Length: 360
Image (tube, rainbow, N blue to C red; front, side, top):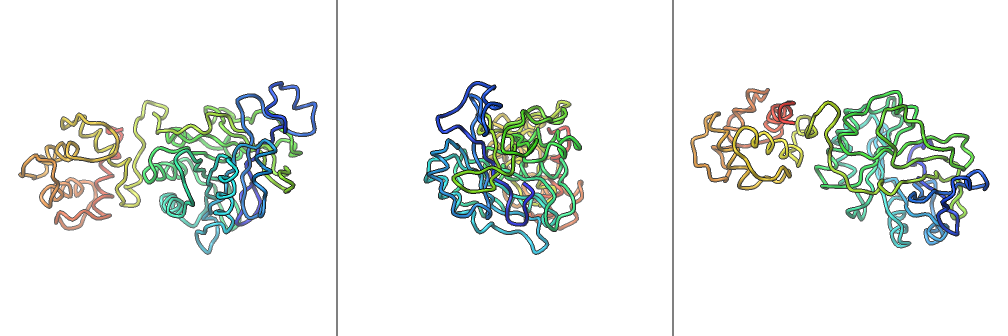
């Protein structure tokens, strides 16, 4: 995106006004980018595209708008982009697909950044894109790595449930890293590769084998949409808008690791891992859905017999049940009181146990 401060470029894919062009040769024969069949065009926007006419954007054949929600690349702290709500409202009113993106940076942990992002989403609806822009801008000094990127996506999933995740990164930075955890988190790749940067599509981005495939491609930062310049233009494959779940990462790993080990806040992934552990060890037969209920708690109580629990196996967690969980946590770094009051320190140590590879 590479503009400054409160903007990340515009994800835009330019369709011919007459519709989607199916002949690949048409790209070279015209002065503008044309999308092949089964690919959509759209734009991503920020404070640099104030006052854009979304009815005209739709009339020109664009299908989606990804609006900058904010970021954590500024030393003064995280922020919400001032134009964010207006872009979302305008795009939705014009019948366009909507997305929301967050710019990564040095000044929040991935989990805290994900929480800030989710807490400040404007009119989020299931099916909207939730994207992470991974690049170095403004006051930030380094790129987030695979562990940090995947932690952000997994935390967003813990907060909102199944969603449409996009991972934005330049192809150069992509090729310089490895991204198995981000792939496992289910993130669709939004590759930035501008080619000659003249507003035309330069061909598929070179991923260097670092990602299974691309779902969206930002191919220029100097497009013109609805009379507004500059706008980032993108192609997106239809599957880019599919809801995703975490997948098995390379090497046979299964469930993603829970960020509770870092932030002390229990969430869906932590409970999914708990259910899988209890399935393996304690007779749990319910779904691995991250929603604890009587069956999950009853299996947990059965396991907690190993940690001093002597109460009934009734699936009703109380002080005695949670005290046993704290004794388990104490074997994994918890040093607080055994009082049955689970707090961040208890959950962190418990999740250190539940994040072991054998419960993947």
